[in-house]
Image 1 (tube, rainbow, N blue to C red):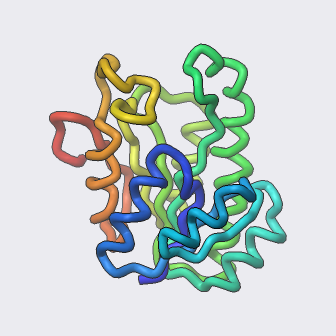
Image 2 (image 1 turned 120 degrees about the vertical axis):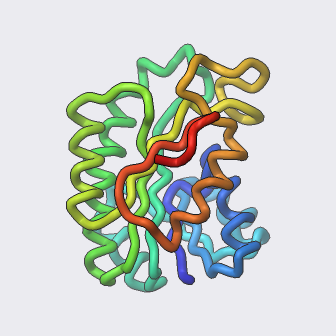
Length: 193
């Protein structure tokens, strides 16, 4: 299967890449950071340097790769949890404008699948609109618990539930590449629902 992974160098995207490759998928890995292109190429994927908010360039990149499935794992979050409040508006933009742009690109190539991350703790108008847009397009929404483990805000001590170890979250994401479609919650101790 051909997979276009947006957010390929993030905390979950970087864990999904080797799992996708191990399953034999051909992957285009999108990043907005030029310094990450060579490491992506070395990992065995097609690196894509693109800004999620440049709809024209994004659609062109997706059309050039012609994926079967687009996986939206983009966030705009700080490295330090203490700065989270400063990034809420930009992360909301990822879930609104960014999601619209990726859905438009998926439609432009008639991709058979679209998977987008969401959150399992709380909601709000931006999250609701994000999930509704993905669902309306026939896509899959994965509501992850708070990530913990290496490279997350909670490297040593798990947060309050709902939560999920980052490696487990990546492993449990892979089966959704081929379906089913709908809204699913991925947290510790719970079956996917």
